View (tube, rainbow, N blue to C red):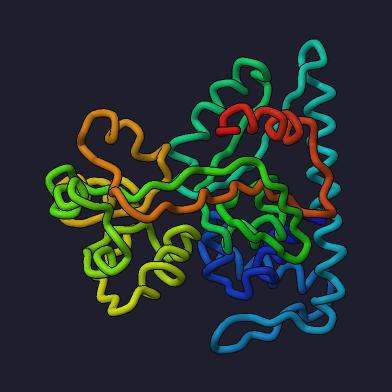
Length: 302
């Protein structure tokens, strides 16, 4: 049996959508459909009910899913063991698929990969940018080996999360913004902040969501105007141009703060956000993934 069919089936089952599965697998939708149909034909069983809003596992499909994921996991383990055993001089080798949000991908992970290439040149890191929901789904389907999540509370079925570090957050604006100038007289309070314009990371960014829902819009008389971007650079550029404020990880604006392009808003303090290292509870941790896990803490604040 072609294990690619099983991997495709598991991805469709976990996403519940052929289009989403195709995106995850980097395939066209017609290929995903054909592979599911080929597996159904080979097993002589209907795995999905096709509905207008997506696909739903049949009873037989639910039974097959657990076994399919076990086979996919066994194949991954076999390949990892073979790769490590074949490494020159007993070196750890293999491929690790790691995801993180843009906050960490842009600031922390390049250093991790550089260090790992030096200490373990036989390890290949496939780095992907994903938010929490997508990363958790991809861990369940086996698309990812590890994920870094920016979540203070992380409890997900089948996914084990271990706090790795904490990222400091900072509210920033242009030095020429009225908030920066007025703060020289007195710290900015929530009532003032609630009247400003904000350029924040896209929906699904945990610290931006928390800032909006729990803090900013909770202020009395809150009327903030909020624009959300899929790019941190877009948010930084708008803020540096004096158009508004943004709450970002300090590591993402450290250079701009040092150069005077941005300044920290004097006012309420924000709790650090937790960096969680996530992996599937029942899946084997390959030697390559273990090496990456050991390297990660050296690149975060303690």
